[in-house]
Length: 364
Image (cartoon, rainbow, N blue to C red; front, side, top):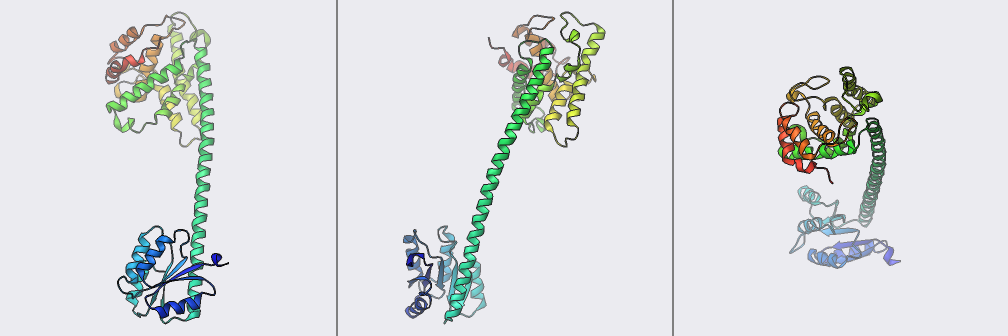
């Protein structure tokens, strides 16, 4: 059928050349003959439903020559992929090079050999088909990769969600052994998030805070007290003050927690989650004046994350009921943290806490 034949557009201002081309090519192709470059451009505008698959374009034409015409073709997304073969009586390599640089795929000299013309057209149609096939395959491969990435992302999200559930369950188990009430893990996460946001906004230690993955930090903070799982119930749940020996054992929960996390790190080449968790576990009981434990670090020798967790941890401990005490009010707890400025707590962070303290107030 005529509609199934491939369409070739022949553009030449010489009527004889148009008739010759029509005769040579019409047995195999549907040939559209056009007498000028401008009429070619006009015809392409109305041929939106069926563009020619190749254009034979004369170079030397009045008003608009082939060089001007191909620039317009290649600048238009609708026509830039149509292969263009120049027809020319010129025999100058500079003209051929100019045309090729403008986007022509070939040159055929006039008067042309019918057999050569058909062979060149067949070759460039084949190349165009292969180019389209490669483009289609590239799109299919990209679609596959996009879908694969979506599948991997979904699977990863599921795994991370499961890991978080396991960590939460572990943290809650530790919290339950401690005899605490009021959701210590969940509360400290809320307070820590508020402090992180304030630190980032205030530009405190920007070289570090600008690199934080906040969500990962919040998740990893669940393990800050994981070492308590190795502490005896008689100490964790004692309703009164601990003896010196008992307090010495209680302080060991920090080292137990760090050791536990380090065992998880074994064989993991890059785990920011565990690195964050270890920092929270190791340093949240250090004090600004060096009187904390387990290492007696002071000032900025204590990592920023540890100094922040110290405030979140103490505030929740103060405002929550424990086996050995009643819950303090928000005002009392905020006052104690203010009093600890420069001794227990980083003075800059203590001042920052005072600014945002109202956001810590437990909801009634």
